[in-house]
Amino acid sequence: MTAVTFSDDQAQAYDSVSEMLERAGIQLGDGLLMPPRGTTSEVMAVIGKAGSGKTLLLAELYKALAAAGVELVSGDYESKRAKERRSLAILAPTNKAASVLRNRGVPATTIHRILYTPVYDPMYESIAEWLLGNEDRPEIEGLADEALDRAEASFQLHKSMPAALAAAGLRGSDFITGWKRREDPLDIGFVDEASMLDKRQFEDLQEIFPNLLLFGDPAQLAPVNQSGEMMFESLQESQKLHLERIHRQDADNPILDLAHALADPMVDFYRFEKMVQEAAAKDDRVVWGQRVEVDLMSRSPVLVWRNATRIRLINAFRHVYDAPEDELLEGEPLICDGIELPLKHRKKRQDLEARGLIKGAQVVYLGPGRKPGFSRLHVFGAQEPQVSAASIVKIEKPDEEEPFIPFAARMGATFLHGAACTIHKAQGSQWDTVQVFAPDLEIAARMGRVEAGQPLWKRLAYVAITRAQERLIWVVRSRLAKPTGPLRVDDLRAQPAAALTLNASELDV
Image 1: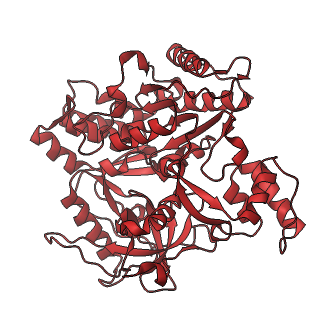
Image 2 (image 1 turned 180 degrees about the vertical axis):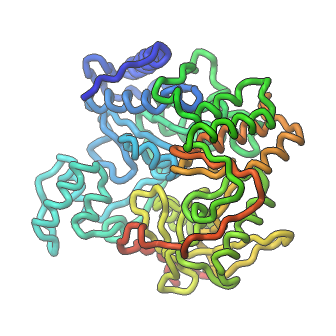
Image 3 (image 1 turned 90 degrees about the horizontal axis):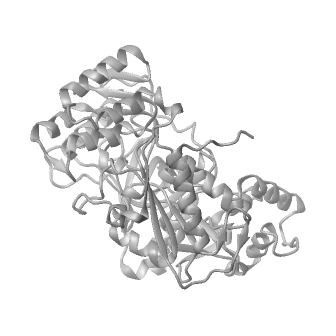
């Protein structure tokens, strides 16, 4: 295995976090773990722009804690025996952001999955305790030894309890009987994409984790209605660890080069567009686009600033695919806009959110469910992506106040169309190819708006550009290409959908 070489600022940050953990009773160097003290709390933040090595540092700290014997809390299942052990949870605000970390070998989960914990059926809880090494191999009526062998092999590979039980032929609805709000505090929390945290989430995390480490990018956009300030900016300077160096492996990346060029105060919008055009002439990872590529919109939304632009692009997308007014086509993208349930259905809300249907979640419509108002959905970034849920789908129309609703359950998860989305909502997500609608950013530049001391168009451009992992398309005209084929769903993982059912007796409306 290749040893990791830290830059000076990474090494300094690693040492500072190690000192924080030592004060909490965890010595990374010799693997000494003291019992949780429960008397002190500490928050620190690792702050740096794209390419500064935040994710690498997070991953190396995770590996060191795991090697020291700290137990990972994934949100899947927690043993009742784990309360006295030292534990770590790695969190992100959205499923998509968590999946970006998981794809890099870091076992992350969402903040929601930590705030709400699953309640397991006692029979299947014994399988979970066995897989964790706490109990002997169980004998489960109706479950063959081969199924348990598959569960064991899956858990050794993925360290995911739901995946292990799925390998045994069980669905979440078989072994999870409900969800409850976490009552007991945890230990160490790492939070990626901390620029997205709002005040309420930050306070919730401080209640749960006495040792909290935030990883954030100061050049991104602050949460809406938060006066342009990110939560880590409110910390004392002594609590902030700054990563300034952009690493060699990122230095020849034209997408990141463009993102960092935005920091130059001499670069205005038109000079920046010229830089994009010059980069596109030299490197095919940057494209000077004369039109929006409609084929990409079903899996990678066009990023815009204004809602009016988003709505126009969505309706153009539906038009070129001949989508009927009164129903959705299989393969149309949606974005979860929240949960519409009265307070008395709090457990159902927790169930929906814990399975990935939280605000901002990206999904693809797979077709109608078996009950009126239900939809079969693929939730991107969720560890169990296939669900069936009561849905309220809203299609917004240009110049119309009220959205058109092709179908709706009386209550459940609400969705907006996802062929285009605002740059604010795209934070935390990444796609192989990203299309940025440049005319919107030009309007922001002409308006001269400023956020937290920076021209707003630069913050928007930075966030939009850094969503692209492989290719950036800078779209300069309001044109839409024709699709090369129909929408598809065959490439999505085929597995039975876990029903998120609202029983008639529970509705009581």
